[in-house]
Length: 293
Image (cartoon, rainbow, N blue to C red; front, side, top):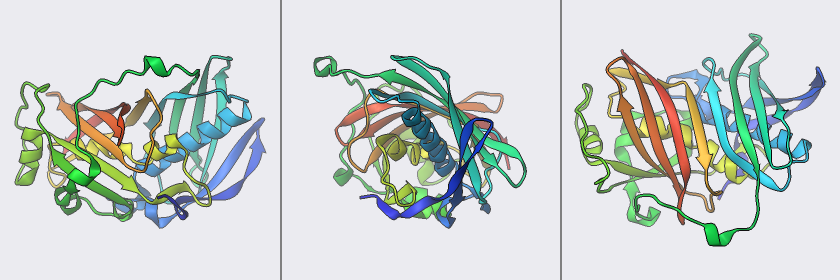
């Protein structure tokens, strides 16, 4: 269960500027990245941007609906320093609205993350429910992923629990070996792996997570989970994350079935199916920049 006192960000108030509300947040040490203790992992600020989008949707009276897609675009490394976030409705409508948000670093005067979301009107149509995706094991049928934790460390990584299961992937015809593999990582790459991820940390201190925040604070990790590359030999930075949800998650576990495809020019895409314990809930796509260390 999420602990509202164990969080990634602490709200610091708000102010008005140019007709918009700007919300102030202080990151906690739990946001720190594996790439450096002065930087944030991509997941917490992506969730912060999603929080700003949800605040604006509520302020705009967008009640009888939800986000179908949230895209986060990483403009620069996100420092572990106070940030502001603001959002606006750029395409208002009763059934369809488009919102945009920005996370800003006041110390440098730079925007560090921007993003957008489609808000769609909802209705009760249970007879239309349709969910097609590979079958996956329950969390109780998976084991702690020691490969992941042996590879990655950092304050954000310490807040998440990752479990893994190898599953048949008849939908994948072949996987080309990639330089940088060794040990258990080659097993993951060749056989395919499914992951359950959860964290007890809430996004905003003192506030329970919404279903969208439950997803946003985790799925940026799909790039690291799905890679076949060794982080000692390669960097593989995602510059964006687009999350699509056909329904909202229920429960604390988020399942990720990632596939990383790399082109011959140093650009890749990680495509992942997302699950809760009741089945598939959506997908996420990430653009990847690859470079040798």
